[in-house]
Length: 528
Image (tube, rainbow, N blue to C red):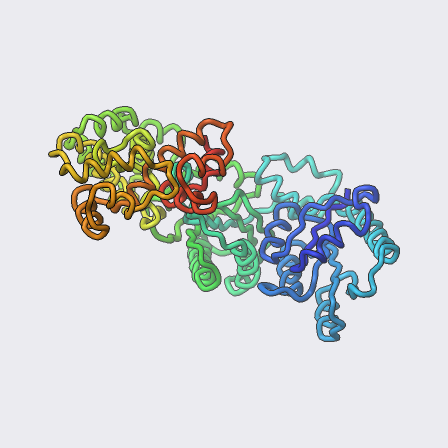
């Protein structure tokens, strides 16, 4: 099947393209349909279509800009422009980009369009048969799959076969993101810049000659790591000179990416020449070195060398468990809690990645167990992992420690409510009334004030003074807790839960629910 990507900022135009012919019948597979050029670039990287059919004029990124970026990724992809404008300037630029054709939407009908894409299909099939294997694809397979070079001997000519055995030098680009285990507990704050890997590839090719190097290949290792492969130009030089050259080149890449994208990165270079397959094995054995960027909290440039192996990581792991941490918090053992936080901070100070990850994960696991099960007996305050989490940058390990310290104190505060003095009679009456009538969509501060014979303003002031939060926040807290219990029962639809918990609309319910939990009702339901 020939894979096709359709791009047009007009939905009607996309629908027309999708329906103009029976794509599947003629041997095509539509792998993506989008009105957004940046999303198109993401879909292109994911599916690597053979043919892209795109509009020329789009608001955020023009078709010409999109194709320029696509060409950097794959120079052989076929491009068909369809435009509502007969603009000679566009046509000239399109010709320079080597597109297959520039069609006016007003001239396109089913028959002419079918003949055009069937002609392209024939060209693509011939090229696929001829170029089934490319140097770039082979190097990627050698690295990722540890395939023996001999596997390609019958496919490549002598020079190409020698090339995949050559000694190369390597640059690893690692995104400074929130560690995976934190993202499993809290809403993702991952960088959404889709163009960073394009920028990395482009900069590697552009800047390498200035350091007497040539880029051979670049590809994504996973969604957080990219690899650049280089060969040295000119005469052989010492290992120290190669190391210095790679370091300076890494600095140039970091600086360039800082100007082009909103993401933060660390770069690791490997200056000891070896084949791609050898480096792939070395990377797999030592990739835990990349974890160190989680404890530095800032971009770094470092030599990639023998790092933390699985064996010594296990040997160095602290003996404390998440269960012990949980019990310390649950039992109100302040000394134990202080020890855990202090140990976490020391690990950050010493850049002890194993201890940092162990304690941070254990404490997050322990704290998360209070989610949904801890509710203040008097105030009705519920403990939520996600509440206030947006004010912390979890890429910074010091802020991770501050967040955990804050959440443990919050647990202690809510848990200790039963030891406080009771509320005043009028506020206790208001609390009881809210608990009993939360399903009423007409319930408000004014209704509660009338019930307890206080003015609206006096109730608001006194309620916040004694309970710590406003009447509306307290009521929404009750409703969200009740809603979570209903959502756990799969038979309820979102709108039904909204009605059963007193919300005036499902849209307002979703907004308040996300404010309290960090998730939409649908996301919460899927997570459960």
